[in-house]
Image (cartoon, rainbow, N blue to C red; front, side):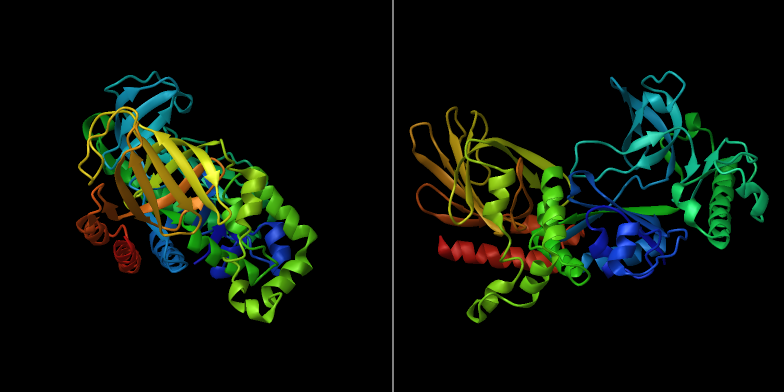
Length: 475
């Protein structure tokens, strides 16, 4: 099994996986070894906003990589893509937008940009499309589709409908033992320049076998007008991996086994480009200091504080990159099924010395407060206190006059306070305190259902229950 890795988690994951291929020069220098330039069975890329990674490739190989990734940390979560990379569908256009159309593929809905097709697209049309960019469930966007069918690869991509006699590297046509299959054109990637002939021949052979399989599927299939929506072909699997705060610190440890790594390396890099660049600067100018700090605490009595997760410089990070008092911040409420609910925006009213961030939201009337059973009225406010790394956070609801309407304690994966968004994944079970002081634990059944559905591990569910029990006792 071979794996190609890109993004901010590359060093850590290269340390985790065997048989990494197509490594960048920086990774080769860091590991002081030469990685082969060979076809990759699995491709690992970062997700938007660096929250996690997308893993795509051959089914058995992806399952093996997926299993390794799930062991990184308790708050590592994963979801399989309903529309995997490279899958081909007969789809039906359900809606046309300004820049493209929504296409029902049966297993899910994708987005077909008008720039990807020469024909005029209207609602009700049927089209044959391929998934080119799977999208994680927590982002605002749908998988991107294309009407051009390809067999994607990092060394070689075969393009259906292309001339088999053409190639982006014409000289290879004379030296490789075989040519692309009829009706397919060859597009060699940049990594092919560094690959040996055996690797190039292997890439062409692999892609040709896949192209032949796809051709046979098309020969047997009904046209889109009769088949849509349905899947024609898929020989890859795609998973989306969400890294929580604890998982990021585990990834730091993997990276630290290879190269000097500051506390909170991946946590900070996942914030903004400027924060990511700052981490690179710190690690380049102070590598010996970071190595010494990782090996020896400043004081023997501070041994327990030598844990890099405890050394994370939250104050310095927020001072430099935010949020700051007076800023507006979004509440990114992740759900175990993979999607994200925007709980709205609030004002940061205080950042305490212990790192607690207080957020105030003004609410509109209508409906009731979940589980509290109290009507929501115009003028109500929600005061929420988030503390980096904590498995829960409380929200106090008050009327316009200041009357307490109830307290809701949300149990979640460890909170991360990024410059423009609070991130975590809700773990369903919660503890509420009514205005009269009555304490109640709710939604245990939803937690059980999430475990049964495979959205949460039993270990993570038990952690949620233990936190809920502690909160219930404290209230």
